[in-house]
Amino acid sequence: MMRSVTPSRRSLVGALAAGTAGWSFAQSRPKNVLLMIADDLGLHAGAYGDRTASTPHLDRLAADGVRFTNAFCTTASCSASRSVLLSGLQNHANGHYGHAHGEHNLHYLPKVKSSPELLKAAGYRTGVIAKLHVNPLSEFGWDLNATREGGRDVTRMAEIARDFIQASSSKPFYLHMGFTDPHRAGQGFANRDYRGVTRNRFDPAQVRVPSYLPGNAAVRGEVAEYYEAANRLDQGIGMMMDVLKETGQLDNTLLIFLSDNGMPFANAKTNCYDAGIHLPLIVRAPGQTRRGVVNNGMVSWVDIVPTILDWTSAAGPGYELHGRSILPTLEQENPAGRDEVYFSHTFHEITMYYPMRGARTRQYKYIRNLFPELEYPHASDLWASATWRSVLRDGEKAKVGARPVGAYLHRKGEELYDIARDPHEIDNLAASSAHAATLAELRRKVHDDRERTADPWMVLSQYNGEGIPAVPGQTKKGGGGRKR
Image (tube, rainbow, N blue to C red; front, side):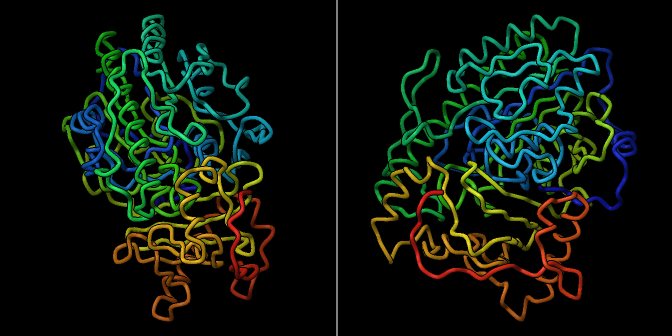
C-alpha cells in the first residue's frame, strides 16, 4: 500500500493536468514507455554503492538518467507488488493480495483498470515479455503476449522486444519487460550458460554479505549465486538499451527500471523491513536537461501508473489513484512534499497470511502487525534455502543477522524503528516512553491512510476511545519456524 503523501487530495484529472508543468519534452513523435522490472533485486548495483555487484549497464543508465535513493515498493512479494505497479492502487485496495499463479489464484477486483488497458484505449500498442505474474491476463488486451518466454533468457527477450518495437512503426508503444533474475529457481539461481550472455561467477569468500544475514559458508555461497544472477539481469538491461538505440526509439521513450521487492533472503523478501522494500528506481526521460541526477525524494510504486499516464497523456481509470506522477520532480535533488510513504502486505503464497501495514518517513519506520499471535511465515523458496537451513542448525542461539530468530518468527503488534540511528531495524522502540509521541503520530497516519484507501482489514479492528484501532492479540512465545 505505499502512497507518497500529497498536500491535498486532488483528483487524478487535476493531478495530471498540473503534472507536467514545465516539462521540457515536446515533439510530435510517439511518447513510448519501456518498463523493465527486476525480480527480487535489492540495492545491489554499483550505482547504489554496492562494491560486490557487477552492473555496468545499470550504472550507465543511472548516469544518463535519474537515480532515486528513496524508492519503495508497497509490498515485498512478487505478484502483489506487480499488481500495484500495474494498477496504481494499494495492494489491499486492488484485490490482488498475493500470488496469481496456480492454487494461489489471486487477481484484481473487477473494477480495476490496468495501465496497459488505459494505454490501449489511448491508441498505444502494448506488449509484455516474460514475467507478468498478475491476474486476469485475459483482461489486459496485449498486442504482444510473450509471457511464456523465459525471463532469464535475456538475449531472446531482447530479440522479441526488437521485433515488437519495429512492428509498432509510427504507433506509440508500451512494453512491459518482466525479467526473472535474480529470483531463486528452487534452491538455486539457475546460473548456467545462456546464449549471448557472459557468465560471471563470484567468489563466495569475497562477496559482501548483507548485515541482516549470517555470514556463514552456506549464506556466502547463495549470495555469490545471487550476484551472478543480478549480473545476468544487467546484461539484459544493456541489450534493451541497444535495442532502443538500434530502432531509433531511445530519445522518445520513457524508460523506467525498478525491482518488485528485495533480495530472496530472510529479513528482506516478504518483509516490511528496508531490505525488502527499499529498492532501486532509475528513470531516463527524453527531454531531460540534466543527466546523472540523484533524486532523494521518497517515492512509491503507487506513483508508477500516475507517472506513465502523465507522460502519455492517457486518460485515467475514472477513480482516484493512490500515488502521484514523479515527472515534475525528475530533475530535482530534494523535491518538496516527498517525505513519507506507506506500505501494506497481506499474502505471499496463499498459505502465507501475515497482514502488515505501516509507514516509512525519513527518520522512522512504523509497522503494524495485525495478527502478531501468528508465527511469521516463509516463502517456499526461502524456507528451502541453504541460508535458512543454516539458521535452523544453530538452534536456540540462531540469529538472522543481528536479529534473534525468535524475534524474527514472533513479532510484536507494533514495531517502531529510528532508521537514522538504527538502519538495520533491530531496536523496537514501540514500548519506549521517549518515543510515545512519534508512535502515536505514525499510528494515526497509518490508520487515516488505511481509511482513505479503503483497507478491507479495517473492519477487523476494535477501536479505542480515540478512534485508533487497538493492537489485536499478544505475541506468542517459543519457536518453530515452520513453513506456511
